[in-house]
Length: 71
Image (cartoon, rainbow, N blue to C red; front, side):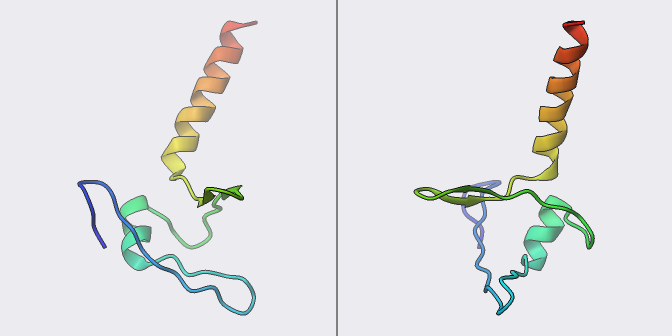
């Protein structure tokens, strides 16, 4: 289901082993491929978030760039 430009929502069913299937459209949009590792963040009040890989690339880039400057 598409909302505002760039905003999406999907549903997923949890299987007996606690696994979920990420909908095909979501995998395509976010470039999720078989074998990829995802990080899930959880907040008991706000829910679960699965940020895109690009968010980590930017974050790690900032961390390592700053650490190089502090040497």
